[in-house]
Image (cartoon, rainbow, N blue to C red; front, side, top):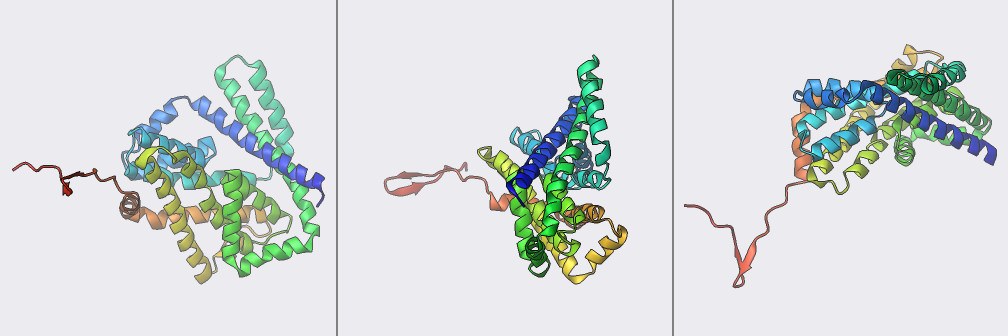
Length: 331
């Protein structure tokens, strides 16, 4: 792989990320402030919160964006940790829609979508149509970026040392998990890292038996954005970010056990034979659905664990005459 191929890969990734942001911003503007009010009002029940997190993340195309907003709402006192947990759980399922869209492989329509989006955005006077144009343009850029990344990734197919290295992930799963975590933490987008993994699988560079462990790591890596957003935001915000991390770590442990004990990889492959991109998308979806199904009943203990790991600060006591003075008690 030459430096031109690396530049093509980087440019495609940048176009993918920008297109995904453009699409999410357009959808959010089209929905208006009602989307945030919807989020604030309907999170009083954990199940409604889960549904809201799922729908909101499908709209903005980013679980990180949803979680960062939840951290902000918790910090502002508009949502408690139990409500935030439901939204975070739902966001993890909602983010899988991007990988399923990528698996549709409609890259040939990308230029048409991009042109239609630009025309709507530039020449329509109605705000809704302008926002819709932004969505279409973002969708087109997303798939155009995938095409560029695919051209660069195809060169890896002719490099046996790369395939041999990635095959190690099947024999040493922890390396696959760490690789997925690191890449996602760096590019700050699990959707982009899963999309890149889908391209590698489509080119025959990595098999599902290795990729499934990378998917687990990608789900942990996506929590870095919320952790950074919670820095300096008080205990409530840090607890929300920690809860997101704990959910994905516990989910990885559970799904890892399933993969090792049951023929999960074979089941996923059988659902979409001969379609590696769809197999990766299904693995991503299955991971998050299984994690939510297994951990939702334990939401309250997870919240208590989070509060125990980040406890409330104890009031400082004063020393008088060499002895510790405690606040006076009323008789």
